[in-house]
Length: 533
Ligand SMILES: [Zn+2]
Image 1 (cartoon, rainbow, N blue to C red):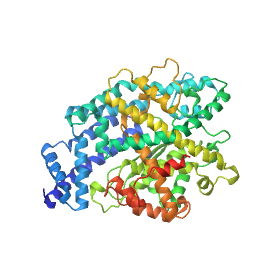
Image 2: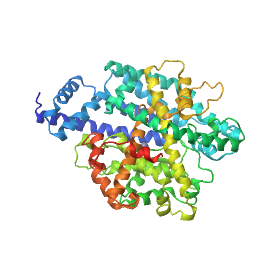
Image 3: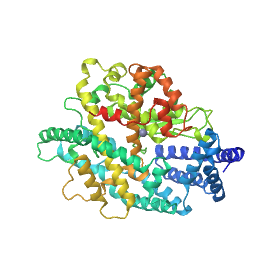
Image 4: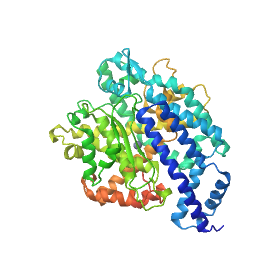
């Protein structure tokens, strides 16, 4: 079938003018909700989301874009890619109107529950920052246990919403011929389920032994420290064991004492020749009541100059490694968004894939464990940088992350296979025990899985962090061998290379081609796996 390019072009242009203002409105509404948490903002967010989705509800137009999509081989590459992106956007928004509206409402509701819920520790309401602080620093076992439990109470409140979301998402997926939402999401993300399984189980096998060794040695330390025979989740370092405990004798928070995380972020990107001051100006970086306690980067619309904002919860008097890491991460997303070639057509003026933008964010946040960056950029005296412990910490980070991501990956598959099963709590804990080697508290039967915000509002996303890590390792190695010929974070050539080879092309090619073009070979997990040895 040959498609007249003028017809495809005029269809794409028509949709550009329909989508642009609505997408921008969603961005504005999202920002307002996250920075105020108000009921009015929540309503506006739901409205904006509905209006956006309605743009793609025209059946005749869907039939037309499907026809272009089928015959896209005859189109020139840039137009062909726009047709692919637009077709996927249509597919992603399809479903019966009522179900889609329900999903929007429930997602907004879940977001507001996570944003407003406070656990109780010592009779006082506490936010996530406080829980994290206790699990990182407290020697008081009772307090730790209380903080850990407090971090999970949101699970009970939000569980019915999460299950209902999973049911509704599955309903939409089945109507479109997919077995469930998990598989539909992968297809819409242009990721092959089999290939992903291969990557994930490959990583699981590669980490089995080293992770077992690591966990055993962590357990030995914790047993001594807390004078106990059995290490429990609250002895660990964060509510989900996403991170390893600090190496004994290594307190990375000290590196930032008396410092200024906002300035450090600007300086880090300055060294790459990438100016983030414009993003900082539009951002909301400091902790405040009523504000979403998490962190994210948001681009509002696609007009040039790009409006890119970061939300974070820095505490000015209390800089620590968590926020240093998080700021470098979110600003990694931000520089990518800011440097997409503005002359690309609207639908290609975005990142190549969520895993490509995660790759940049992860490559940047990894610097907080890099002795060279700590010395040269964070100005930590060399004598205070314990290279050996930092290397052990970096390796531990990778191992702990892979095992945690595996839990999320497998749990979400189970959730979407059957959101009604009544043993989800133990499905979760079985995975945690088998994969992370973390003991289940005796008799625990709580929806701890629902306390993880991603399960509710960023479903079928975690593998993008994993692929992101693989790409980050591969990209960094490539830049340091071929472009910077030294640490990439001190190289303006590396910054220029990122703009030209990775950010600039936007979504002109698929994510695999974007990577292959940037580094001259296909995605290769070996670089990441090697870093764990
Ligand atoms: Zn990210």
